[in-house]
Length: 262
Image (cartoon, rainbow, N blue to C red):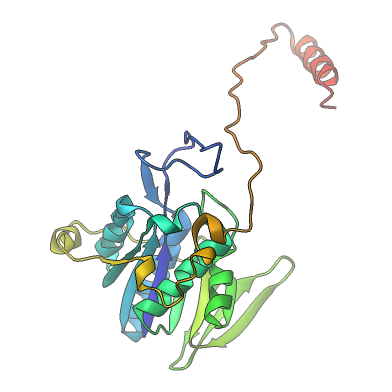
């Protein structure tokens, strides 16, 4: 079983500046962490490997500092890692990101299963996984909450739909996006950290791609145009009501009416 897991480094804090010209986050120098949903994808990959054997490759797209999440994946038990990084990829929206990742997956080889987290905490679109599958022309299942059977030619899973829970069997190669709590993610191992501290991480750039049309990558390949984006203004104003319970309740009720909240 050859498994690819797509992971992402996201800001570790809500205090992130935004480039008002491009509408993208300023990630340089910001404390970062692995996207929480991707931990469930990694754990799922590790459990599939424990049951069926094979190899796991973790792939991330971002600047050089994004190698940290690959190293964390090594500490959890991943076999190989790849960083997709090039200035031409900067400013990618979900469509350009999906295409870039699909091209990178083709470069890395043939995979039976590609796993991603349901979504990322910095974008929350939940679109990259399915779009990536469409570019690769493989079937995909989103919102997977349970795995029933791992066969030689297919995998049977449960997916959480808006109004139903469905059980689906899909043949390889396929892509799955994982919901949180499908499994409890394991902690990184210090022993593996020491054993993999010098492990090579492959770098994939634009020059490695078969498709050299620059109009499909980065800002040029992003049809989503952000008109304006800005951090919300902090408002520390507060009002304290004192007195008997009935008096406080009346004052709160009057204030809500004044603010046109009720």
